[in-house]
Amino acid sequence: MADDGDLLCRSPADRGSEDQSFDRERHIRYLEMNYQILPSPYEGQEINHLTLAYFIISGLNILHALDRIDREAVINWVLSLQAHPKNEAELNSGQFYGFHGSKSSQFHSVDNGVSVPNNSHLASTYCALAILKTVDYDLSLIDSSSISKSMKHLQQSDGSFMPIHTGAETDLRFVYCAAVISSLLDNWSGVDKEKAKNYILSCQSYDGGFGLIPGQESHAPCQMSNQITGGATYCAVASLRLMGFLEDDLVSKGTSSCIIDIPSLLDWCLQRQAVDGGFQGRPNKISDTCYAFWIGGVLRILGANKFLSETTLREFLLTCQSEYGGFSKFPRQLPDLYHSYYGFTAFSMLQETGLNPLNIELGISII
Image (tube, rainbow, N blue to C red; front, side, top):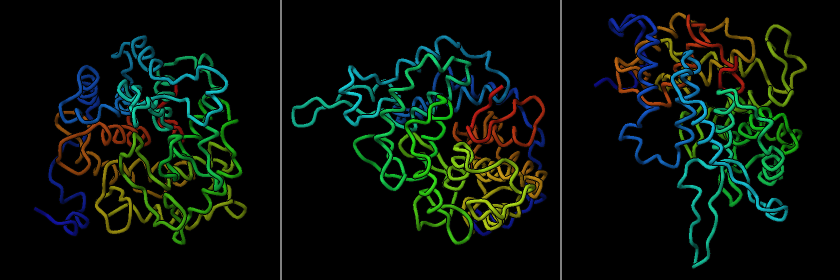
């Protein structure tokens, strides 16, 4: 088996004769299969059902195949996962009233004989609203004031956000979730934008990229944690764009008055495209399908996608396209929903024929 160094140094010509076309129909069949019944490897991810549904339904929409789902059933299922305060006192209790990640996470737990409600989650709420937006549900019908008012309790004094009201890690992933939730609901009352902006700025590293928290190494982590996937640099840039602190196409307009160090950020992002054409999350790491979105999306928000090699990126991604449909993390491995979705978003950004365009900041296709 090749080691990391061998993989890092492989050029597109070294990777064999993989299929050089994007197989849209096979990808649709792969997502349909997962829509109908999740394979056994996902048995342990019951609490992440809403996130998995986001990958499937938003993926089908990117593939121009949303007609394969039961729209009303999806809407009713997603809405059934929303947490509702019983009265104004509960709304002001500090608990977050967003969406749960699954049916089981709605059950109360018992702590020393006391029934304790489980938490709705910022990332689950992002996924829920993204799904509803994707299936063209009227989001004005949702009680956005309860979501926004209770979300305000999750913002910390430094501007970061916790994902749940009982305490958890605070980092850029959840600032991004709060920004998308506010944007989709067209209600920013739950976010102190100035504090959030200052927190994001404190996360930019000396090399131009962003860490998840201040002082951390710049990276675009490809991880699932408490129902959220995320790249720190993408979350930072997309959040600032959604909050109105960054203009579009910054590279062509000049960056001298920008609140972040655009030249260093651009340099860091472009250095993440490896010799094999794919993108890596950090220096000296192996290229991975999902970074084509996390890093490629940042370059497109900045208006700098003309500087990346789209031809070699496409070639790399096709080595990760599975014969069963979907995409894998690395070439010639089995596909999974996470990497499949970000493979589809990458090909949408590459303007693949037959795919719907992507709203990069929101992470979904909106027609």
